Image (tube, helix red, strand yellow):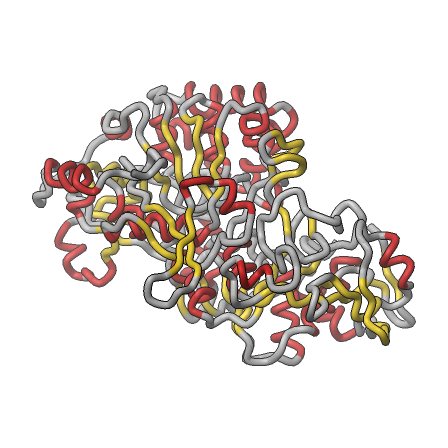
Length: 323
Length: 260
């Protein structure tokens, strides 16, 4: 048996999948209703990467719903995961790299929680994170790979990362245990009410995460008709039967970016970095109060970011469609 | 910021790193580049002498066109995708390293040791760290699977006998230990600093000075290193950045966001 509690027994995984209604049905709901689908203690995988296509609106709703003991995994974790730690929603992060971004230095909120042992940060190489999700998506228990060998990254993972001799070639290979998140939170540019989702730009690890997870909560810039999806099925990346909820959340990655719609809200990220760097505990609590707990709704949150900021981010975001 | 000077130009340490790293590249290569010095070096090489060089970004981009003055702030944002040949999922772009399509990967780190192992995870003991750093990202994958160039500032606190934590393996414990650990391919090829150009001894895999930067002495390099360096028998001095190289670089980064 795997010592990693995140690795799900295969038959249970199939049973849970079969128990879900996988019919072509509408599943549009509010952020608050979707938050109820996440249980305390769940392993929640975040789609996107770093400052891009972060499911910010859904994370916002989980923090407001005061979820607890979530294990959070992501290819690269940024300020959203800072805030999940600061809000007490998660004490366990599984990722390859964790800080707001190179230009802001090392995250003081991450450092505060990890160095004081308030949270665990399990570090895997970036490709290893991807192959763990892919193994989960493939329904196999592990994936062989040629990285993390000879490093302390591999050693520090103890029994959760193993090496073996390939039975065919006699080479040494590393073995990565599959990741099957309980819930995947993924933000897309558009999807239909059933959850057929189309992504523009960089896909990151979202397809594997969606296939690996027990259920997907989709947030989307806009809901389009099933007829529109059917006109360009080659653009559909996530199939409806993996999806349990569809939430329309415009500017739903703010203050991060959504390809072709808006770029990161850089001045706002500077503000968060300044606040949390100066005093990681007090600064992040003030920030949570002002932007997470006080707003009446997601539009109210956006209005606190400011119309100027929204328009500026959108102007830069849409620039990929120019020339 | 320390200013460096040659007979006909003044330049910063970062500019020096970009130029020297660029000169190590060859036309037609496929280069895995991070943001900052690596991207500037690869783009400089493209513009100076390597028009068929392809840049890969970890976020999933094959062959972007870099627009002067609009350098992306990370490898995962839409600015990285401009006029690219192809966008791939992250896992698949990293798998190009494992499959063996990539000639050179660029790396950095908080610490490097005499065997070229890099640390970007912990300062101090991993279980009780003085500082928890952001971690490997794709660094461990790049260093495990391809030939690397490391470009970093030459400081004694960064060039240490043994790194606190091997995030990205170089030659591990020297000699054949890298291959024996299950890493038969790749390895740390060159280390470029503001003081010297270094490689590794073919036998012992210890760091070895190959050439000195303009105006730098052997003693200076050794004094700024926390372990005993090997020196090539015949040490040459590298030609300082030319006016053309610096002009191209400054056109790419006019606001000096990455080259201050």
